[in-house]
Amino acid sequence: MRMVDIIEKKRDGHALSEQEIHFFVDGYSKGEIPDYQASALAMAILFRGMEKQEIAHLTEAMMHSGDVIDLSSISGVKVDKHSTGGVGDKTSLVLGPLVSACGAKLAKMSGRGLGHTGGTLDKMESVPGTTVSLTEERFIHQVNDIGIAIMGQTACIDPADKKLYALRDVTGTVESIPLIASSIMSKKLASGADTILLDVKFGSGAFMKTLESAKELATTMVGIGDSLHRDTRAILTDMDEPLGLAVGNALEVKEAIATLQGKGPKDLVDLVTIAGGIMLEQAKLAQTREEGEKRIQEAIASGAGFEKLKQLFASQGGDISYLDHPEKFPLAKRQVEIISDRDGFVTHIDSLAIGVSSMQLGGGRATLDDAIDMSAGILLHKKVGDKVERGDVLAVCHTNKEGCEEVFANVKNAFNLSDEEVATRCIVHDYVC
Ligand code: URA
Image (cartoon, rainbow, N blue to C red; front, side, top):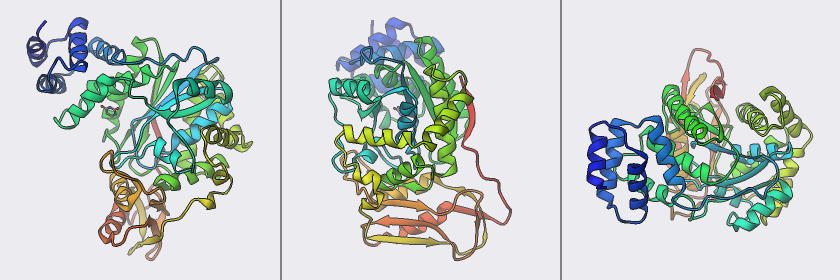
């Protein structure tokens, strides 16, 4: 088999066979196929697309390029969730403890933040002492012991995706649904859970800008899960404003704590209730989504979810006095109010601009090697649908940096106001089951 023939076949719009796809993934992982040929194929896939069967073969080949975690020594149904990335997305830190408190087992591998999106691992590390580097043995033991563990993805999982994703990033080939879907699903499938819930975000702060493109991605990923016999479902959620009110690591952990104590913002509460209902149904711990949602609401009201969050951090070395006393999280030296200079109603908050601004205030990283200021970020005081009067605070920027005048202006410009009253946004727009 020759790589050039595979590239030409896809260039001319034909479907690749299972053998051809394996030849490419194996050869590229081993360094036998050069970057220039891999990028030519990625570009051909971007233009020509892939059939359902080809996407399943690509996913399977990437999944088996490294370790596939064996969670069979954990009793019960192992559930997992994945978000395609957003701004203010602290869902895992609320949803994970809630489904675990309801009896599901969550053995989750998460990522770090990059660019305008945050990562669960960074958020967890804002609680002093917390480690996210667990051995596989400790990870499995912890899930058996307390029903939940969250760790960083090991280097041995899906090395083909690591290499291909880095290449796509610099060759203009990220925005291909077959490539995004196989990249996400190969990692999820290698992580070993029995069920997967995908939170596919759309809007200004998300990969997918429209509901239609998000639905296409979700349908493709659910199709991959089905063809590999894994119960996979998806929800399509709004990212046309940040999720909740807090953006930035420690600020988001504080919001996660408040949410588990029954004081969360409506969009976040709705999201974890609906997602949790589906995950409990997938785990066969509820007959219907509605029954699952009721159990999630009870786990918030009883404090069982918050207790599970404390167990999670305690097991991973975190100082849980910060969870009981969130006022212990250090505040940034500067808290700068962003003031509205007009009356009106908030119609839209540009999530991308808020995410980038939070990063520039110190709360995120532009490259993987950048250090993060855990206290930096943005607290929104207004959400879409809210009435605003001239002089009202729209948001507060938290930073230890000097200057930042341009960032403050960008945060102000992220708020779009109109004279007309607007409805609040609903968080979940559609389902793919
Ligand atoms: N996230 C991934 O893991 N892979 C992609 O291709 C895009 C987003």
